[in-house]
Image (tube, rainbow, N blue to C red):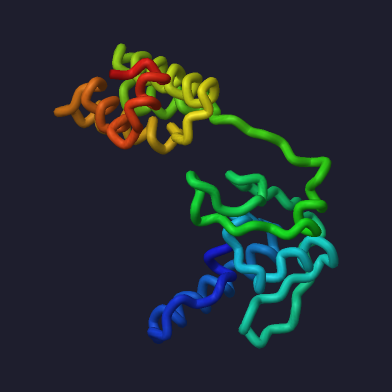
Length: 196
């Protein structure tokens, strides 16, 4: 919803029409199903705090009156930075004000990567091939090192899926993918992760 309700980024007529159509779609989804995602990238003008507090929502610069939140709405917000704004890993995030964060003070839940989902994704690409188990084992060891040594790197589900897809296509080895993944790591980070 953040993309749909943020300010238009272009004066180009086509882009303006596309943004208007997407905004209309976002409004319908909020009215009909109560969907709200990616709140940490939303513009403050989007009025999400009003949506949470008062059950109304406004679309900036639309000329439309505020509309009421759907009765069955459940707000689930995802944020990589706990609402504290950009950091060295997630530079495209906005800091949220204390009043917004207070609405979630006793309902914040840490959700780690879903290893069962990742296993299913890898199996979808590689079946029961040993390379799949090797990839998952390596990813787990890298993540353990990241957590243990507070290394400022991530190995996402998207990254694991990409590696599995490349292994399935062929022409690349797991060793080559590991080297590619680790190339932006410092020598100290690689040593902490037990990588050459």
